[in-house]
Amino acid sequence: MREEIQLVPVGEAELYVEDVGPLDAPVLVTVHGGPGGSSHAFRAFLGEELADYRVLYVDQRGGGRSPRLPEDPRLFTVDALVEDLEDLRHALGIARWTPLAQGFGAVVALEYARRFPGAVDGVVLIGPWVHFPWLLRRLWRGLTEAPFPEDPEEAAEALFAQVPVEEAFRRLAFPTAHGRMHYEWVQDGGLLVPEDTVLRMFAQNGLWRFDYTPYLLAHPHRPFVLVGDADGTSYPEQAEAVADLAGGEMIVLEGAGHHPYVDDPEGFVQALYRVLDTIYAFSEGS
Image (cartoon, rainbow, N blue to C red; front, side, top):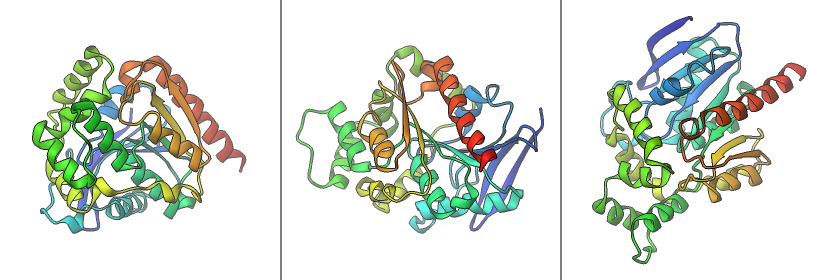
């Protein structure tokens, strides 16, 4: 299988990119979660299943295997991540592609498709997060019975003083201990941990107050949402908001959590291929 690994300059950053698959195939670009995560798990769990596509496994600026950036909040915004994707598309000479995004990455993928609709064939979202006060309230309720503070930033500070951020998320993301251990084993195998600088910079920029839902009403693309019904971070509020407000389609995978390709790999791949077949059948006919 063709594979090219490179650091691609984009604006004030460089992105680690694994460019895999046939050059003449439809193009998928992964938009991982976090902020501060990595595309490593996407390839580890889905690489073989996506062999018919050209897939760009991208680590966002400052995270994963991409070079670190200064602790400057100006460098860590959704707009910056969107511009990075467009710079990457031009650098690689790609006409159109489909973002495959998860968690926080859903906001980046949706905003990219809103700003550059002509560069997008479709949008596929896994366990999307688009309303971060909702997400924070879910995390709070999963860890404490204390009343939720009125100020989301105060709530975040209090919550993450009790338990590490990653642990708070994983308690709601995995329905089984086996699924969690499998995912963590794969991540450890890639020697990757979330880059907390990225999350801290986004938090300084108001992440826990951020609500993307107003932008969904006039969105130019109909997103496809794949979500596990045991995903305590996204289902039902976040996933339903995206599908309902943007006129998209939601596919619910029973018993799966935030990483449905871990909890129900066969069901997830079947659903993903149905979505991609729909996107590219429409693209070829339009």
